[in-house]
Length: 392
View 1 (cartoon, helix red, strand yellow):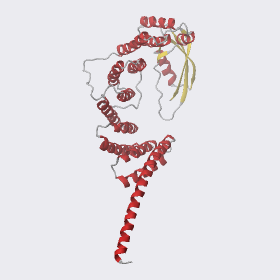
View 2 (view 1 turned 90 degrees about the vertical axis):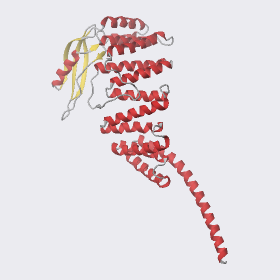
View 3 (view 1 turned 180 degrees about the vertical axis):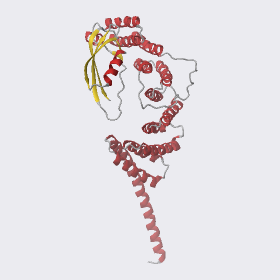
């Protein structure tokens, strides 16, 4: 074969090799697409099974392979980076998790825009990581940033934004930011009123009243975040405006009663539950005549359900029970304090008798003092048992 024929043969062979390589690349890309989906599912299963170390290693390998093919900023890197962050959170490495989440967020923003909603899931993961580090201002900043992006993208009437609003309410409530939570509750309740759905509205109204009950009677728990908070896009309340917990809770529970009375689908038991909450609210604030008037109505509504009526009125139900905190100082010690209480027809504790204490420590005195301030529904009874188990 002459040189010209040999050259033609080499060119033809090269063309076949090039075509063959393109075909192989296409097959590899298709295989990798299937493998990526399967790998994501497999990694999620490992995270659910708490196999965090192996999941982190596999996620890192997935990221390295993707970078080698598509570069460091391809959107295909977002999902394995999020899964790597989840695995590191499981390994109690929130700093490493934040590194992975931050990179995933940057990649998503390049593809979806700086205000895109695709980053919301990552922002909420960053909240958890910053919370694990105790960096509350940063965690709150991510939470409020997610709310603001949702507000701008979806609007108040969108169910997705309502879910994100409720998520911010829960965050505020957990950290005793009651005024910001109240403002968001009012906004969300007003939106749900327009949708003419009774049960979601009832749930929100009762939780709104619960917020004010926590504000007035709850004990602040140690370890909650200290930071300034206010929902973006909402004007702050003027300094002269004062919110009355009793009035706010009364109005919310009163609206629940009205909704139950106006609904033809609700049973007497639904109305009785609403009236019971309304009466309990008044007894907490010492409005005994109003409370009794509604308790009597609850009694009549439950004529057909004597079992439930007995469970409500035959035994005292503590509405406010400020028992001592379970504290740990040095070596922990377990104990129990058991008292017998005398409860008046107004739900007040007027007598306390110690039945059993083990071991005898200052906690017995603390429990006795705390039980003196107990409020409950109006049932006259002597010797009602109260048992408090603690770790001290």
